[in-house]
Image (cartoon, rainbow, N blue to C red; front, side):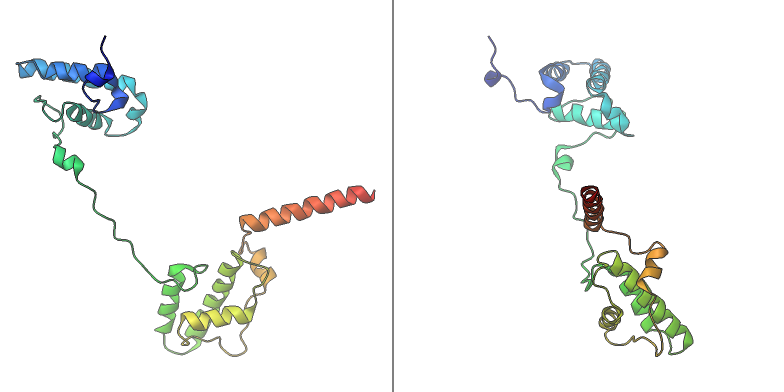
Length: 213
């Protein structure tokens, strides 16, 4: 009786013991033409064992790579794809350089800070004042996406001054859009928690109405 402890270690377990034995058999063949023909057949069998792999565009190349991995990169055949090396597969991918921006108010995002920096470069005048009012209204709209219960114009104006390092201030006699006006135009959508609260309120009100009847 043959036990697993006496067998060779499976290189890629999802293909099973028989596929590995077939590949080990190919390594014993002397003629390269014969090895190539049998290797192509084995790749087709591997594809049938895992049909979901065909959903990827380069699935054939991946199967051939697995074939070489199972053979411990000892298989010499006419491969239709570049033969991988053990070193190339063991190399760790390079780290993706993420931008580490210090966003002071995450509810507004990085892009709005860039817009504010652009407004700071404009010359004083009617165009800059209109730009400031538009930015402040957008700040209020973005804030409503996070919290509509405690927003007020003084807070939004304060955030505008902080984000611009005190260089942008609301023009005199200028007012922000009313909260109801922003919401009526589709801004300030409810968060998931706010939607739950609103749903619970409706249910509670409906149940109370039934009890009163």
